[in-house]
Image 1 (cartoon, rainbow, N blue to C red):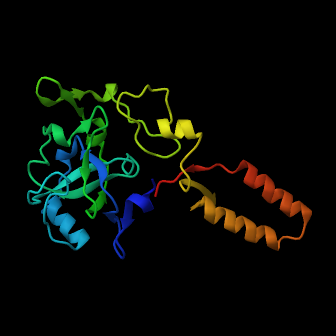
Image 2 (image 1 turned 60 degrees about the vertical axis):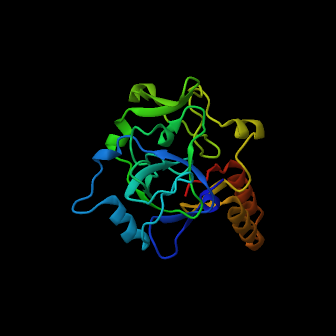
Image 3 (image 1 turned 180 degrees about the vertical axis):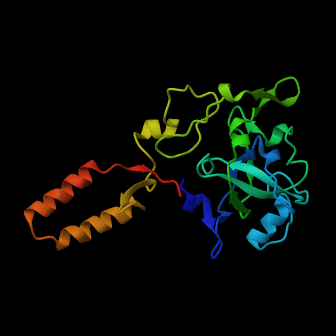
Length: 237
């Protein structure tokens, strides 16, 4: 699913989005060094969102939100796109809490629908930090392990932009759904027009209107050639 389906920008606010459904998320490793001068991340979240803190944003937690936690929202975070600040409780913001780490089997925590999150920078410390990954221990619940940066490589489906499951072979470039489908989900394919990224529907509409106004056979042939060689890419707002 794309940004418009999962996250919707709050009107009139930059880098502030509201979850349109529950979304997989986990705490960002290496974020403890990302500090703001003379304020806290929860106060920054309040100022940017225009909201007051209430309960923790994780769907299975009803404690009060005390911290602005750095969270990785699956399919909506990366080194280029950044990570997110969400209002969460002290316990959920604890780096050693295995329930708030990336899950080895894809059973991650959820941020609840309606949560407002604020985008922030993905720092070098986050990029180089050890990756804490939790896994279910048959002997007694969840445990976790650390992975060096050299052992961890973020993998994202080249079609839909979603994170590939932990442990996916490095030569795999597509998620199972896109591999079986043979391409990205409908509506996620986008094109560039004059340097601006647009959806396929917008591109086809523009193509039709331009083509209708052309009278020469050469211009129409040129447009057909451009469409045939257009390079669709995963939609990433």
